[in-house]
Image (cartoon, rainbow, N blue to C red; front, side):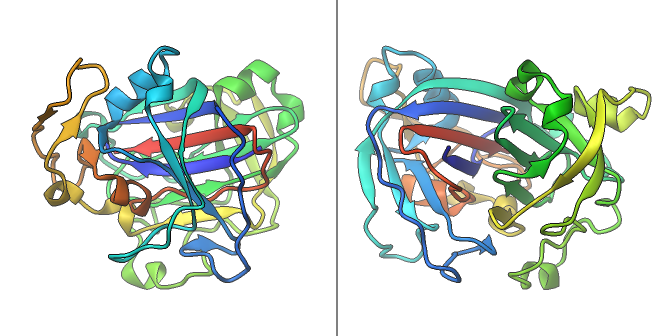
Length: 301
C-alpha cells in the first residue's frame, strides 16, 4: 500500500483512495535525506498541470476524464529553483474514492483549538493510517502511515473504510497551539505529545462533532502508536501562496482558456497552485508500497 499525504490548496479536506493506471516505481530514500519527513524517507506525488483542486477532484471521480490528469512522482519534496527531475511523470490515477470531505472555509473553522488532538483514522483491518484533523488556523499537518493499533479489531471494515475520528487521551493540542518557530526548528520532534513507538490510550468517535462535544459515547477504545513513517509540517501548511497563483485551466470547460479566481483569505489556503508548489506546500511521504495501489490523502485549506 502506498500512502500520499497532502496539504493541498483549496477549501475542503478530502481523503482519497485510488489506483494508478500503470505500475509506478516507488524508490525509498536513504535515512536522513528526508526533506522534512520525521524519522523516515518519503516520496511525493503531484498533478503536472496547474488546476483548481475542486475541478481536479471532479475529473478524477469521472472515469471519462480521470485519465486526462497526469501526475508526477518525486523523491522527497521538490525544492529550489531547479529541483531534481521526477522519478516518474505523466501517469494517471483511477478508481478514486473520497473518504472525507470537510470544509475548511473560515465560516466553519472553530474559534478555539481542541483540548486533545483529534485524528482521522481510516484504512482496513490490515492497514490503518491517520491524519491530524485541522479545525483551526494556524495549524500543523501531521500524517502517519501504517500505525500500530488494536482499534482496527474493534471497528468494522465499513467504519475503517469510511474513516472515524480518534482522540488520544494524552495527546494535548490547545496548550501547545499555535506551534512556535522553535518547534518548527526541531526536525526530530512532532511538537505535540505524539511519540514514536508509544502506546497512547484513545477513544474513537464517528465524527469530530461527537468527539468535541463530549456528549457522544465512544464507539471503541484502545491504543494507538505511530512508527517511523510520520510527516509533520508547521510551515508550508500555514503559508498563503495566493501571490504565486495567476490562473487555472479546467478539464471540464471544453476549452483551453484560463480563468482568474479571487485570492483566499490570508490564513486560508488559496483555491489553486502551480504544479511546482502543489508538492512543496505539503505533500507528504509514501510508506511501504505496492506499486499498483495509491492512496492519496489531501488535506485542503
